[in-house]
Length: 354
Image 1 (spheres, helix red, strand yellow):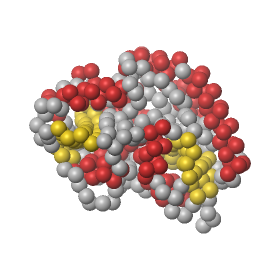
Image 2: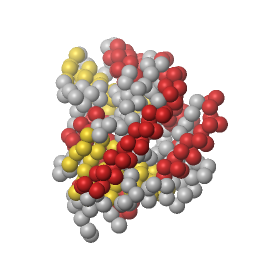
Image 3: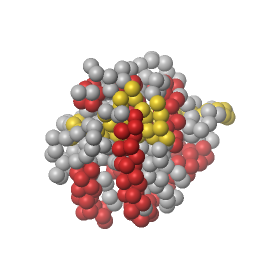
């Protein structure tokens, strides 16, 4: 097979896009020249996990989040013109990279401006439709139109989920009107799960993540409410700029940790409490773990997924404003979803490398 020069771009909204791309990047970097483009904590995570690749720090959409969940959507709408301008700039920068670095393949995990009209480009997303609050639900069709317009620039759009039967993305990527395109390819679950059998045991594993300021609000609630929680507690703050560890009684707090160590923590946890970020859900499901989700306020994708999982009794959830850990952990569902085979990365890599 011809050696390819691949530009792989990753969105920096939380760490989920980076973690779900890790299995694909690890496979590609074995035999091909991979250039990873990202920014912020996602770029730092990818640098710490991937060797043998080059890296480019290029900003994405610099979205500012509100500390009030109900106003998040309106804040994003106000910033939409700036986002669209950034997409245009991002695309121009990509075309320049293609010429200067002789790129012959592009993969973009949710960075809509990273594509080229000169070389085959591929897109990864689990949202063919963006969820809106109830009173705006009739406007969701415009998000489908937006996606269809941008998907024209890509040879294939990979959805990390099963196409039929049991699935984790629900209406985000299934039975979406006007999305019956042959470009859409369901590639199965992508989960960055180490093959090691190592386990770091705990009764409760808290994984803090997501955009600011909600990440810090969630962290402060967890730190306060776990002071008197019994059992062994591990808290991972998701702060990639630090590696500090603090132990107090039955509680150990990590600013951040390596992915193989986090994988061992997930495997050894009796219960996980985290955001229902889609990449986290894929990891927990692949390992058959019990979890309680706390959606980021105003982040409609997470709020939809949390409700979808509760309705199907996969995972329960609690609103951040009503969070009461000692009571909420009593209402965690037993695992009742099918066994999942993760990381069928060949469904992506074979297509990219043709």
